[in-house]
Image (cartoon, rainbow, N blue to C red; front, side, top):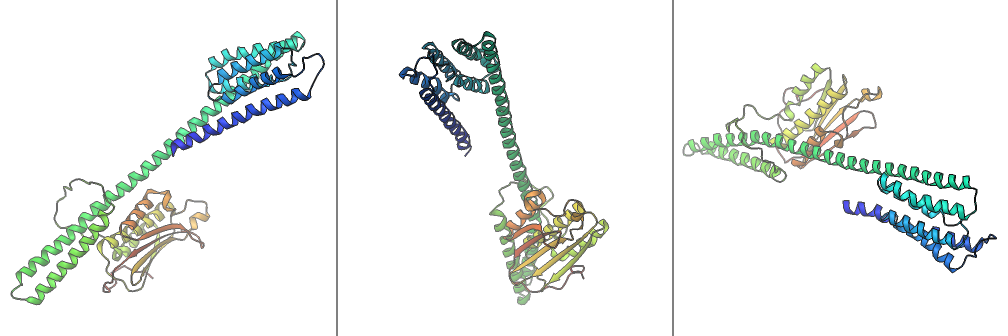
Length: 409
């Protein structure tokens, strides 16, 4: 794609120079055919041929500007030597000089300008102009061409530098985004350690219990084995979700492989999170709709982290304000919406929650949602403020009692 983007401007410039050369040749020939001043040789076949030789080298001004200038000046000198009217064709060497100055080093441009100066002076002499006018024309016209060409050279160099910096910036932004995603995956992998350790600990305890009461209490043994099956199934679900996307080797965890110090946070602890944010002067209202259910550890942890990140954005960017957390349980999914009241936006401050492309924290939210098979969106609301909305699929599970602090007024 980059090769094509470079070739297209080059092809366009070649077409422009070719059209310019043809236009100068045709206009010079038409003018010579129509305009017949007295005292000059008629515009014959040689005049047509030399007019074409003066103009057509402009087509090569991009690839070989010095050669184009030399050929154009030589053809114009021959045209003047045959006694044709000098008022025609003298613009072609000037255009060629502009092209040389725009594309070549200053020393090359100054050396090449001598050709244009010579042929323009010769044109003034052939035109029987006063000596002072011939000298002024021979100096001013090439000087203006050099200045114009040098300005074009500066613009071209600045455009190339801007393109280079834009490409570098785009690469750096892409690298930062990739690093943010990789960092989030590493954090998720560390959290997976807690999830797997929890399941393995439960499996170990239940399997030990089943083995202990296998011959004495069949019901308890069957219940323990059923719990082992459920725990192993949930652990496998977590592994399938992450192994489909995670390809980052997090190395060895030196904290040990025992049971986790505490259970991973979930939706049941959103109320505790809201209480902690009151110290930051943020009034968080948590509302639960539907019958709460126990989610798998992965989706439960994902939901908690998304709520935590969204409320953190409110604290950091919206200053003292109000936020609302709406948790809706449906038969096959759970939807969490985190909203702020948008008051600070009306005062010209930064909004609390921004679109997912604008921050690495929201990139992490999106990554978590994708890993759990859900979806996440963020954006302004018509009523004011911003909203982060997370939807996660759930499997049918029995209802659980409301946790303390898990819902609000």
